[in-house]
Length: 201
Image (cartoon, rainbow, N blue to C red; front, top):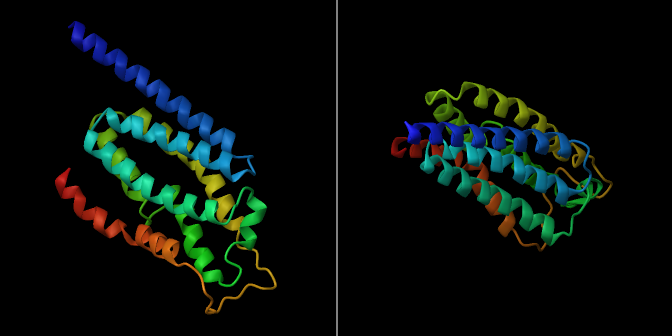
């Protein structure tokens, strides 16, 4: 009985931490123009999801952590390489090719958990396991607060789509490092691979 009491209280405390973290990250990130702060609040939001998965399955937590790390790494490599700090700098990213910019910006939609991108998979599995273990209220609140967080992901994406005079929708060959391009492409198409992992959960 004592063990059951402690388990119930631990679950309640973890649920409260998850809800508060998800709410604060969503509200605080809405009016930010600094990419570093936006990524920080994004990390808090994803941390709340990862903490919630601990209540149900450590395998889900591991998959979530790996997928989030891959997507986050793709974004941070580009932000660091081109020294991007504010939203208004994104319009000048990849000025020689609009297609590469769009491919990179899709990573933010993936980070927001939109299907059919890779970031949708861990959130989908997290909700499935939370619902299976009767965490209905927690699942609903996580979804609602994540929709708030999705606002600033969409804001980042759409703010970068303004065309400059030197941008082109046609591919122009230039000497550049396409390592990040292939990493972004890999992370975007990896959802099909992750679907096969369901059989091992």
